[in-house]
Structure formats: C-alpha cells, structure tokens
Amino acid sequence: MMGLRRFSIGSRLTLWYLAIFALAQLIFGAGMWFILRHNLYDLVDDGLEVQVDDLKNFLQSQPKDRPLAKLQEEVTETYTAEHSGDYLEVYAENDQLIYRSAFLQAHPSALFPPDQIRRPVMRSRKIDGRPFRFALQKLIINGHTYTIEMGIQADDAVETLHLFRLYLLMFAPLVLLAAAGGGYWLSRRALSPVDALVRSAREVGGSSLNNRLQKLETGDELQRLSDTLNEMLDRIETAFLRITQFTADASHELRTPISLIRTEAELALRRSRTEAEYTESLRHILLEAERTTVLIEQLLSLARTDSGRETLHPQPIDLRQTLRAVADGWQQVALVRNVQFSEAIGGTDADAPGCFVMGDETLLRRLVDILLDNAFKYTPSPGSVRLWLESTEESVIIAVQDSGIGIDEEEQGKIFERFYRVDKARSRAQGGVGLGLAIAHWIVTQHRGSIVVESRPGEGSTFRVKLPMIPTPAQNPQPV
Ligand code: ADP
Image (cartoon, rainbow, N blue to C red):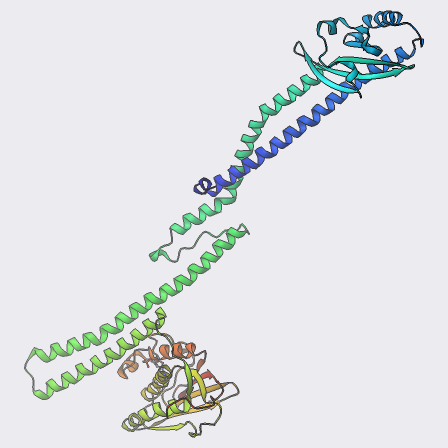
C-alpha cells in the first residue's frame, strides 16, 4: 500500500479497478469451468447409464439357471458385435469372468478387484491419452450378482472443456486490458476538473488575486470544492485590498505632517529671523509633531487590532465611575473652547441598577474620549455637548450629543471606515485623520455592542453606544 501512495489518484483507481476486475474474472472463469465440467460429465454419465440399463435388460432376459459357460457365450456373441461392448467387463459371483472386451484386455482396469465395489461408482480414466468415463457397479439379477465395468469415450466433453479453458485464458488478458484502459479513461475523466483547478490555482498570486479558480458545473464534490475555494479567495482578496488601502492611506497621512514640518524648518532657516519668528516656527513644528505622534499611535493601535494582538482585559465595570472620570478631563477643554458641557451620569449610589458592563476599562475610556473629542472638534462655539447614560432591560447606552455641524445622511454610514473624513481639510485642521471612529467601532464590537449615529447637518449629532448589561455585582469591586 505504501508504494501505491506515490501514484496519482488516477493510476491508483485504475490499479484497484484492474485488481478487482481480475479477481472477479478469476472467480467467474473458475466457477464457469467447474459448472461446465460437471454438466458435461453428467451428459456422458447419462449415456453410460443407458448402456448399463441395456446390459441389465439383456442379463434379465437370460434364463435363470443357464450355466456360466453358456452365459459367457451369449454375452460374448451379443457384445462383441455391439459398440457398447467395446469397453465392457462382466464378472459373475466369485470374480468369475463372463466377458472382457479386447480393449480392456489390452488395458486392464486398475479399478478392480470387483468384490470391493459396494455402490455404483463413476470414474474418469485416461487410456492411451484418450479420456473415458467408467461405471463400476454390482447388478443383482434373477438372484445372481454380477459385477460390471462399462466405459464410454468422453472425447467430446473433454474437448469442449479444453476449448472453454483456452478461450478463457486467451480472452482474459484482452478483457483485462480493455478494463484497465476503461478504468483509466473513466478516472481521468472524473478527475480532469482537478487538473483544471490546479491550472487555474497556479494563476492566482499576490498581484492577481482577482483571478478565480475555474468555475465547475459538475454538481459534485469537486464543484463544492472549487466554489468554497473561490469564496475563500473572495475573502482573502477583500482583506488584502483593505490592507493595501490601509497602507496607502497610512503612508499618505504620514507624509503630510512630515512634509509640513520640513517646509516649516526650511522656511525658517532660509534667512535669519527674529526670535519671535523662530518661536512661532517651532510652535508649528511641535504641533505637527504632536499630531504625528497621535496618528502613529492610532495606526499602531489599529495594526495591533488587525493582528489580533490587542487583548481585552474584561472585568465588571461601573460605567458611571468611568464616564465621570472621563468627563472630568474634558471640562477644561469645554471651558477653553467656550462650549457648554453637561453630563447626566446619575448618582453615586452603588445599588442603582443597570450601569454595569463587562469590559476593558482602558478601552472604554478611550471610546468615550474619541466620541467627546469629535463632539468638541465639530461643535463651534458657542455650542453644547452632552454626555449621559441610559439603561434598558438588558443594555446600557452611552450617549454623546453635540449641537455642532452634523453629518450628512449619506456620510453617516462611512464615518466608521478608516481614514474617512467628511471634510478632509476641516477635519485635519481639527487634528483628525479619520481613524478615531474606526477605533471606536472596533472597541464596541469587541464588547459585543453596537454604535449608531443620529445627525442632521447644521443641527448636531448624537452617537449612541449600546453595551450588554451585567447584573450589579454584590460588592463593588472598583476602587472609588
Ligand atoms: P477624525 O479624526 O477625522 O475626527 P473620526 O473617525 O473620528 O476621524 O471621524 C470621521 C469623520 O466623521 C470626521 O472626519 C468627521 O467628518 C465626522 N464626524 C465624526 N464625529 C462627528 C461629530 N460629532 N459631528 C460632526 N461630524 C463628525
């Protein structure tokens, strides 16, 4: 079997086919041969029995107490002339020979002594290379016991058998050869789609990911295989395109601040400047450097999520505390920007239901930070930003509302995509590169939640994050 492994499926199938066919042919041929032989000998034996019956009738017709010598004379007279006497021997009691044909005198039977014959026997004998069937039996006629041996030629039967065997041996290899050819052809035909698949699979590469395996219409396992592989290629291509796009966008985004920094520095160095001018240039450079740092951090964070290396540390979290801490940090920003900031997070009562989720504290803080950052970025003074918590039966909702510029209906579906910005120039001026909401979306998905936006241009936007609620733990594990 080990050796077979090295052959192709087609050759293996053919070999198996051949082996099974040869075995079947052997069993069939041998079986037929035995059946044929049995039937042919039956026919010969039937003829022999008829002759024995004739002899029986003849002996019966003899007077009961005819002396042996007279009987010998009668039998000899009758059977010497008769064809059925050619291979005949008849004995009376005490092995006294009554008749023996000339042929049997020349070829004495090896099957006697006659007193050992209990029941009729049929034997095949070959004499001078010619086949015979002999019947040996005791006949009890008119109170006398005779032992007879009577033969008949079996040339025809043996000849037929020989021919049959010859044909079998002659045609078996031919049939086997035809079977092997047929088997090979069949397996090639059944497996030819595999070759087609292999050929088309070779065409698929990094730069030709849009190639697909040949579409099979065989309606069988192979079609299922090619369909499944093609679906897999679809997914790989989508992921590949996303990565390519991401890399292109990231490089592009990184180039902008760097070229700005460079231009600023070059301009400053072109001629000597006042200290105030240098300070101004350095301030610009610092600002761009800070933005670049933020961008790089966001890129790294997304790269980590893509590679699955960003791991969550989920624990029961009281969202009221988390939100309050985050909100505190934004009070100052609100003041500076002259935007009214209000929060409705609820009391500190630890027993108040419906504020606990299973989550990663750092990531959830980041999520709220992103939403508040956007709200302040896109809300001109004087406007308002609101943060509050809602709870339904099984979920907690974090809502961030602003009275800012709002988002067009058709843009609302795209803002969660990486690098997507409604107004590129404006967003950049605010320090955004379009990654915040993509990260927010990832965080929400990781917490098995959902994020939706409701907005009207010019009237403001409301972002709602829905997270699955968990029962309030018996003791508040969070340090206050
Ligand atoms: P960015 O860093 O540019 O803010 P985000 O992924 O956070 O990127 O947001 C994507 C885009 O969605 C933003 O560029 C902006 O056009 C739009 N957007 C996000 N939040 C708001 C909001 N509160 N009001 C108006 N537009 C918003």
